[in-house]
Image 1 (spheres, helix red, strand yellow):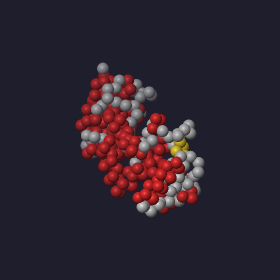
Image 2 (cartoon, rainbow, N blue to C red):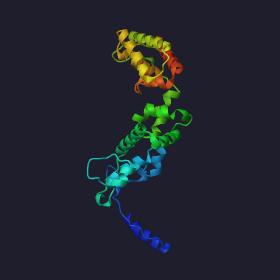
Image 3 (cartoon, rainbow, N blue to C red):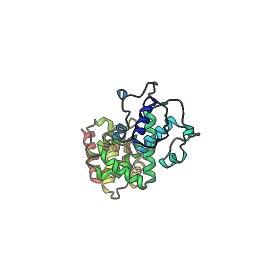
Length: 266
């Protein structure tokens, strides 16, 4: 802030340090154009890091709140920012802080790191372990399953909770809106039989297997894939059922499908 600048100058002089070149960046404001304040939510970098926001995403977004690269490009790696940033393109107007926009940047950086692997991916794995205590050995599998769905790493705990403890769910949600109880039961039974005999437990092969169950028995995806999803997760929205099958493994998957059949038969 400008009012504190004279104090900083005096401190440098008192300590005999070389005076740096000071630059005043634009203020950051809330969407209602009020000044950012802790009373209105998290504003400190430490708060966002503690939730699982990546430092490179925070830097990327923060830079664009007060600087314009001269084109429509928004996503920057740290290397790209180091090369392109210049003070002559710093804006005079205050920047509006939008948490939804920050979430977009963070999600993009997570996906970028997962796709490109390398050293940043290793760091992401270690960072992610802080948010899945007790399941550190499944971090890579969790990033594969949820990486494209995350806004920040702190979301993993809630998103993945069904993997460790199947929530209680009413049998009614096993039935797709365009299906019925008879077809749903048939789909679950046929899928269970096919999966029981199947040993190559990988997402691609599992998807092909369930598609074959649909086609060979004149069923719809809603008769098979939907109830399998609910049986495995207890939820109506989740990653695809074949991704969940792969993650859970054969034994746990079959147990959950059997549990669903018991529910729908009662």
